[in-house]
Figure 1 (cartoon, rainbow, N blue to C red):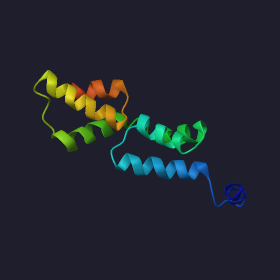
Figure 2 (cartoon, one colour; figure 1 turned 60 degrees about the vertical axis):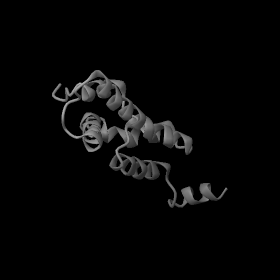
Figure 3 (cartoon, rainbow, N blue to C red; figure 1 turned 60 degrees about the horizontal axis):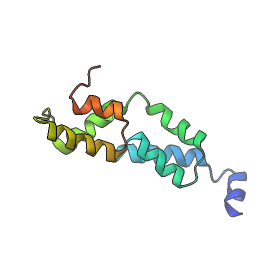
Length: 110
């Protein structure tokens, strides 16, 4: 197959593709679950996905807070309904539940 030949000569790499894809999707405001699912759909092995996501593991809370602030502003949610709306937005973006809870409660210090 042509992809195998390209990989043999170093012109195609799942790892390089995964790294590039993760950076691109993070800049768009996507979270790790959404990125992981998209890479898996493209046939990237789990090891390459985990390796590409690993450098960002400490940044998901800040990135989720930034995505929420871009969408809703920096004011804390003023109702349970608004908190749920923001949580749904972050869930659709692919952020994990613990990150969503902290951001939607406006509790990013812990």
